[in-house]
Amino acid sequence: MKKKLIERHQTLREKILENIRDAILKGTLKAGERVSEPDLAERYGISRTPIREAFRQLESEGYLTVVPRKGAVVTSLSERDVQEFYSIKSILEGYAARLAAEKLTDKELDRLVAINERLSRLATAGDVKSFFRIHNEFHELFIKASGNEKLLELIQQLLKKFIRLRVASLSLPGRMEISVQEHDKIIEAFKNHDGVTADQLVQKNAAYGGQVLIKSMADD
Image 1 (cartoon, one colour):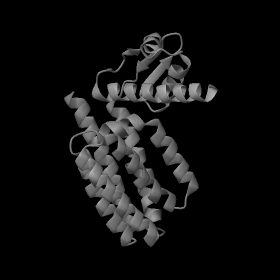
Image 2 (cartoon, rainbow, N blue to C red):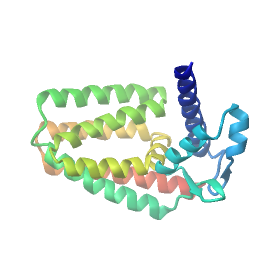
Image 3 (cartoon, rainbow, N blue to C red):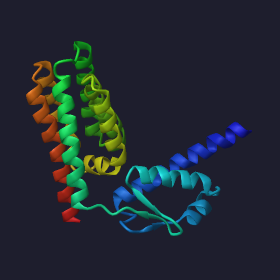
Image 4 (cartoon, rainbow, N blue to C red):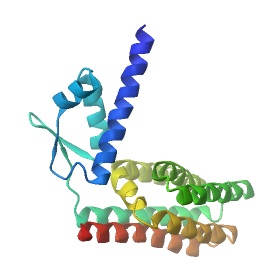
């Protein structure tokens, strides 16, 4: 019985996470808007504990800001946030690509090709959530291949904090398809063991992600 309660608790927590993420990305919940703990508890018929857990995770991902005694509000995003994140991301991942170009094995290169083929199918299907997850696998593979554990740790910490920005960028029209095309070029540079070109391409890809997101924010 206890196991079933724990599973239900976890399932509801995931559902709350998913619903709030979707509402923020679609603009149903807008920046500065309060997300009510009591309302969610009543809607799902649960205690506030899984809701608070969900809020903490959403805060770590950049979706919510939890204010003491006031509750959770949708975090506001600025152009500066986007510019700063993508500039740091591009430098760190570009450096990882430069290191990886000399170390990637044939098996790892084949894996990158297979991942990108899967991403192409997901882009055609318009499946942003699955694309985001598999996209992470592509980047994590070559970052790990760089052989620099501290670099991997820094990038993972940075990416976790800005999940919202990355999903928002990939959700924009045509963005997934362009990402797949850029990955093809990056793979080619890896196959040629060309670290300089791999670095430049990864930086360009990251910079473009930031540019299209800033443009979409200005258009809203």
